[in-house]
Length: 162
Length: 449
Image (spheres, each protein chain N blue to C red):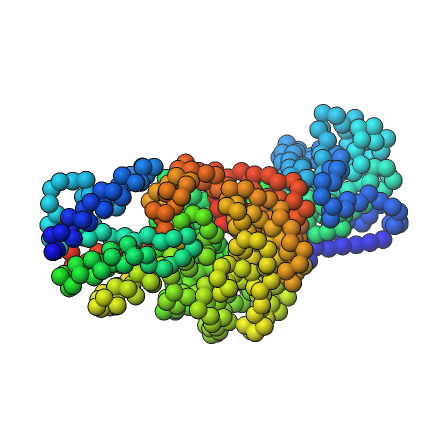
């Protein structure tokens, strides 16, 4: 069962990479196109086999069904590795004003954290930070990029396998 | 006879007061209220007034160099205001040789000058510069105003700005805005790894100075109207918090000890409080903190994003953005948090409200039909007027006299980035402000004198 889910995550990951055509670099998913298996419990394992990010619709912080699915996988993975601490980064696209976007991205990070906690993750393991529109990953001036930037990303800050 | 002197600031401006001292000149002859030239700056698209800034006199090479440089500052200021059209000096017929003699007005009338500025620079035995100027009405052949200023040589540009402000004030009836500075964020590097630095420059772009080294992400700087301080947001130490930067010492200090992210700071008009947002879970609420007592006060308490607070100049009210209605709109409240009410009702979303230093208007960013517009409305929400629109305009800030705004405009795409622009309250005279790199989040200082 775990295997199946993991396989699907890889497919989703690959599909995402294909979607982000205008993205110049893709440092966030280094293992996604690498055939070598990731060490269980490592950052790459988390990114490739679980998915480190979820996406939001314009000016909302509501978790989509796909986002919930990803966060359930994240919670399951985090339960396997209880020493891992995480930071949830909230982000917004560039089509908003700076201060409002900082708050909007905070709301996204907060929603993400709350969902993980609802799945049994100890809130003490979860930090949040909000970047507003300051850290885009996709750079074109079209919805195809903005939709990639409206995201929250779960970073493993400590306790992961190297 | 009429005499004027420039007001010097209180304790917080002690340093500035020692830099520049302005003393009135005794005016030539009895001063009568003839119908002198006057510019109505409340109308847009006004025909710029032809003005001749004659070469200022100087005794030796050094004095003449200061004279030339000061004239350059004045000419540049007047031209950029859009209200004046400085006449090229090649067209001048009379060469002023005596500062105290009447100009040959006929010579200036022939080249269509309506106003004439003359001046003289001399170095004092104590090392300071003395600069004198007179503003003449060419048609009525009268002196309109005149001042003399003293300063240390390294502050010579401020003399140019003070003279510009005196000319502006005399010809428009409004106070000037040239002796002021702008703080903003300099942006460099690729769009997904932007390096942001706090920088400051004079309103004309001179004295460009980087205040932070780019190590930490910094955003939204704003001047303390009463002290040499800038409030801004920094991600130093991996936490997003409001800080205060001391311009004189270079020291920075976190504002308060809040349990979450603080952002969107602005000073109160008396400089004693910072008003800002505190992130509390999914909501942002507006707080004030007294910088002396460290006491905090919560002004809003809604399950919404309340941010971008800005005081009215008399401190009685605060305007801010909230999405409590479902999307971002502009609200006003009493400065104790009571009487919160929405004032924006047009089509679109509204944010970044900033109260004019005159108190009569609130400038804002409006998002409508995929565009970002800069506009103004009265504090009761009436009289909405759009000054500029396009792909992305954001973050207006007011000139000290409430007649000009600076905002930033982002260009599209991967290599796109923000630049600063100024525009008159009338919507005319839009100009890019030259900066070495991309620039965003401008904040205009009050007048320095």
